Image (cartoon, rainbow, N blue to C red):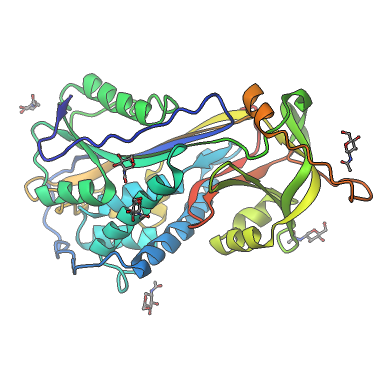
Length: 431
Ligand SMILES: *[C@@H]1O[C@H](CO)[C@@H](O)[C@H](O)[C@H]1NC(C)=O
Ligand SMILES: *[C@@H]1O[C@H](CO)[C@@H](O)[C@H](O)[C@H]1NC(C)=O
Ligand SMILES: *[C@@H]1O[C@H](CO)[C@@H](O)[C@H](O)[C@H]1NC(C)=O
Ligand SMILES: *[C@@H]1O[C@H](CO)[C@@H](O)[C@H](O)[C@H]1NC(C)=O
Ligand SMILES: *[C@@H]1O[C@H](CO)[C@@H](O)[C@H](O)[C@H]1NC(C)=O
Ligand SMILES: *[C@@H]1O[C@H](CO)[C@@H](O)[C@H](O)[C@H]1NC(C)=O
């Protein structure tokens, strides 16, 4: 593997915490291939790059747009025929970072579609504003998380392909991209190189992002995110027992259920008939678990405002909570989903990626995404660490029981920014 001359490989320190608790990982990829030559369209107006200042305003506009994008992408994925009867789990943060990095090299209608698909209002934000906002957000994620989270991007460039230096420079500076030269003619070797990189960045969780490569590939753009946290209050493994999980009215599957009877933060949203449980990690991150009466009611309505409202409305209550212990993997090709969200041109002959190269006609051949989610008690160590079994003697009457033994939704968020790192729906923890 050669280091691209215009890059320094940045080393993200990846902390391996001991076999702990919740473990999230994710990665998104955009595969850029040579597009077919095509009669010129009037889509080559250049991007207006006025100098942004990475102001608080741009950062908050981009952060808000990313949150809205999370749920629009979720709904599009959930509605997709391929998602029926399956768990959904992905990182909106990773998808938006990858698409924003791609938009650095997009122009004309392709750029307009990416901006609008990502929810960036082009009368308020330039590409430079977006780049600087991502720079701030990625730095902030790196700062606040320290040991348990890492996020980043990388670009793999074919030996024979020379992208514009400005494109690579922006990726390196604002998206902290690692850059590599590879020989895509040797498709197995280059796929291995990329897979090895992603595997390392995701602590072994995503080991085969690239399934196969076409010789027409000239560039591979990656964004990854990894999170690992210990519950502030771990589950006692002694209380973990097999129990039924109700996939639907007629289907039960045996699941391993963890249990905790403790003072926990919950909220019931009456409008959505949904009970929300907040399980904090020993950091500024939390998992939100949402158990609706009717999944469709929650899925169709959920928005960033709900998350903000829930986090404010959380109250400590003694609750007897049951959550499945599970490990899931998901894999998506996002081409159709993103096209349905209006980002169509980048996939076809109308693609305008002239910010990457003027000489070659480029297009996006695939956007793929894989994610894994493992939830467990924390093992012996975590169980010992907390010892929280706080027993509120003031409590009178029966302790409410909250059993996540039917389909629920899950979010991993950071408190200060309410950034949605991961989002999903667990309909069957055993598949
Ligand atoms: C973009 O921002 C302008 C100025 O605030 C506003 O008038 C317009 O409605 C916004 N467009 C969208 C799509 O939100
Ligand atoms: C993240 O932090 C590490 C260690 O402090 C540093 O080496 C790296 O450059 C940082 N990355 C970003 C994106 O800020
Ligand atoms: C990250 O931390 C460094 C050093 O602690 C600080 O100078 C910088 O402003 C922080 N960046 C963000 C975006 O919080
Ligand atoms: C890859 O293959 C093409 C055509 O088959 C050839 O022109 C090019 O030189 C090859 N690139 C490398 C780095 O071997
Ligand atoms: C919430 O639940 C109540 C009682 O189960 C039901 O009458 C009502 O229609 C539900 N509302 C929604 C929005 O699903
Ligand atoms: C308090 O702890 C005792 C012993 O573990 C248990 O029997 C009792 O049910 C607990 N009370 C409450 C209110 O949780």
